[in-house]
Structures are given as C-alpha cells and as structure tokens.
Image 1 (tube, rainbow, N blue to C red):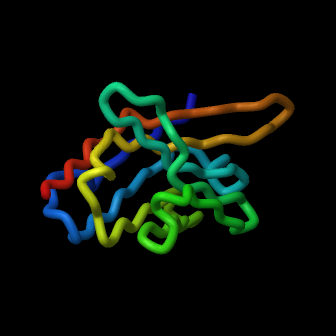
Image 2 (cartoon, rainbow, N blue to C red; image 1 turned 45 degrees about the vertical axis):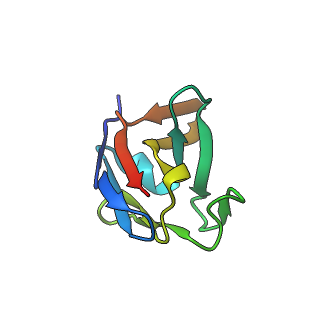
Length: 118
C-alpha cells in the first residue's frame, strides 16, 4: 500500500501564492502519472494538473498559466505551485498516483485545505 502525505495548504489572500507538496512512500512514484485534484463544497472532484512519468503535463483551463506541477523523483515528491490565487480556487486539494504494474493502481492522499480570501 502506497501512502501519500500532502502538505502546504492554508489560508491566503487573493493574488497570493502557495506551494503544495505530496510525498509518496514508494518508488513506484517514478513510473507513475502524478495528479493534483481538488474538490470544493458541493462540487465534484476535478483534475487540476497532471504529469506523466515522461514529464508531459496537463492543466485544467481554470488554472493554466497560474499553477505549475513538478516532480522530484529522488524525493518521491510532487509539487503544485499555485500563483495568482483566486477565491474560486478554494477547495480541498488531493494528490494522486496512477499507473500500471501488471494491474492498474490508483492512490490518493488525505487532502489539504486551500482557502483563498477575497
């Protein structure tokens, strides 16, 4: 079982920045697709950003040009740099590890709260 531990959430004013981190307990990290998702109250969980093991990235339109996903395979850690935060970015953010070794796997962190005040 892979453990994902997130950190870096908090309260920030609109226009501010935060960096989320997610550390994985397994070396399968380096061969996995990594993702950050978020879920606001009353809404479905949505993909924010993802990065494949090869380094290709994908962002939702709502965060493009403001958020950056990166990974450090030596530390088994994925980051989400969030700049220009808006109140609508307020949500619980979850990191995700996804891939396949004989069978598909999908692991989630416990979530970290990000609150952006106007």
